[in-house]
Length: 393
Length: 222
Image 1 (cartoon, one colour):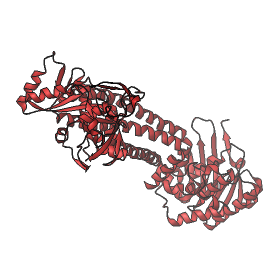
Image 2 (cartoon, chains in turn yellow, orange):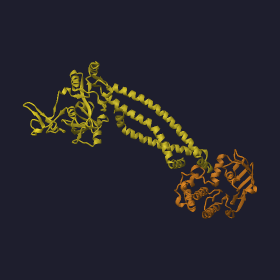
Image 3 (cartoon, chains in turn purple, red):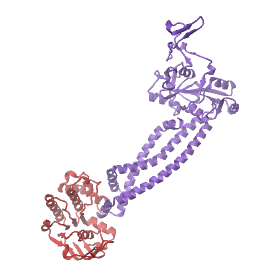
Image 4 (spheres, one colour):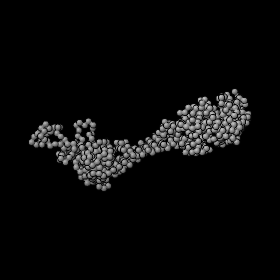
């Protein structure tokens, strides 16, 4: 058998293009369904485990899926905004602990998650390096963010403008990295977590600037009266929060009206949860309270319905490829009549021919198997990222 | 020893009939076969080697009645007793020179590939002037070089009978004499019998005997 494999290896390595085509066909047809299975398993794991650990989610009426994807997996699609008052009302009801979320902005491609310290306890997130955020302008970054951006506690990270040519928008905020989270293998690894107020600073709702009452530069002042000073855009706005300028940061408007994307609701008990859900059934209320698990199960059902269709397509392509391979080998036997005749004439038998062909097929399938295995390792390595890009968005 | 008696052979679907009433080659004899193209000289070699089976008559060769052997027995007989230098070389493009020479050892269980055989193959190739081309693919060889590789493959198992079909047909005059010397030396060294088809009448004096197919051949049906 070793001799047959040796000759077969010589054959397949001599006809490189033919062999490469066959190997590519076999590898693709084997790897496609396996890769699909891996990605779907990963998406099911990622989506379901996080959704099932989140009891209730409050957000604006509209797409429940967008709300869940944004709040749990920090997807790019931002739902309709709600106000901080929604979280305060829930807190006042005494039925659940609200954890406000504001997931709208990004920092160098990673989602900025404005929330409170309760979020860390709820998600069981631990600081691996540095410390928890304590001051305005500080953030805690996920393990993956730290690794990819090569950041460590003490470094700074700039928020990104919402749009590329956001001339009228706010300046990017230079945030200080207070700590790095231990890896949790969840979307939190890819998040930049900061206090809600800092998130509002990123948006420009809370800001700090030089004291207009003390400035010596008259060109900044448009109008000055005894109880009011109006400045123009020349006034220096701070893009970094420091101990020197932190006191100058202030709110404009009522903080109750400040925006959120969602509120995670942690009911005190099952009964409280049921009551809470009942309260938000009224369509006159501009909010919806969803059970993330139900939303994700619905999404997965759709995904698996699509997967069944894909499986059928792959099966058909597989059968077609198998038939094509049989045809290729049959035609190759015709093309190799001279070689087969040589083997017969120098003393080979029909069995010799079958052994040689068997060895060639073995090599092709072995190489394909190895490539397929390698492809699966790569897919497995990047499946979390693939799920994030393909499913979560 | 080769003995052919009352042999008749016809290729299926053709009207060609090869009929040889009596033909014999003694042990260690070196016989040249001449005759016009298409007269059946190659067919005779194929019948002696057991590649073809006669319709009638017998082929007795190296203590075996070849024509009555089973397919498997004829294959074993051919591998172990016959060295065949084919007219069209029968080399495989995807194997290098050495692998082509060793090919019979790799495809059958009747021959055992040992380090000694490998060494002998290298020596034979060296003698044939192919020492520096052992690892070269045969598709990059000239016709003459391919011929020499085919001769090495035939001689390697030290066969009792060497059948050569235009063994020097593709060689230039200088190499022709040299290769024929090597072929004769190898045949004599192993006490083999040589039956060689040739069109080259200049070489005939070097053989013990020449058989002209026209003398005994009946080719009818035309």
